[in-house]
Image 1 (cartoon, one colour):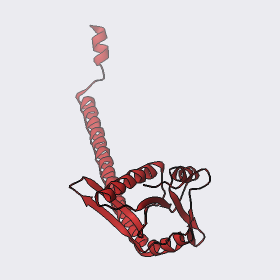
Image 2: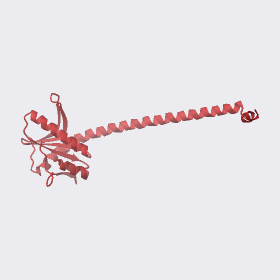
Image 3: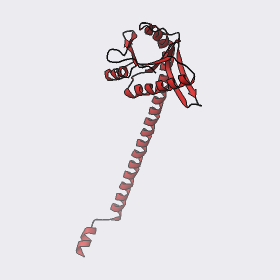
Length: 197
């Protein structure tokens, strides 16, 4: 009985009420911090969405730059490798009947050859594998339209890693990369060979 009284001694309504009030204030502060964290996360998400939008716009501009600046120079550069192309453009294939859908950043053509160029800022292995799939689609589409020309492929990059470059050459692609104020084309030769589709 005395023990119970000792434990309860000093515990007054005012002290209990003050503890409840302090706890309530702490809960309000915690709630405020949670809301502030949520607001910051929303702001970060908004900024990331805006950044993604700008990257998309930049990618579109890069595509336009390719069409107007790189395409004409590609034809000239391939002449150094004894290719003469009479036509160069960006191409999109939408063949619903045969379920063939693909886009080509730069398609260089003449009466005997077609060179399909995939252009990336920094090509990776997946981009190169995707271009192989694209080449197969182009070949299928060409066969459906009695196009007997030889199809060749190239991968262009603003920044080309050494392993990606070797992989592209191994797969039979020409590699296009910056060189000084212009760009150079590396032909798959010696132990590698240009692949024909």
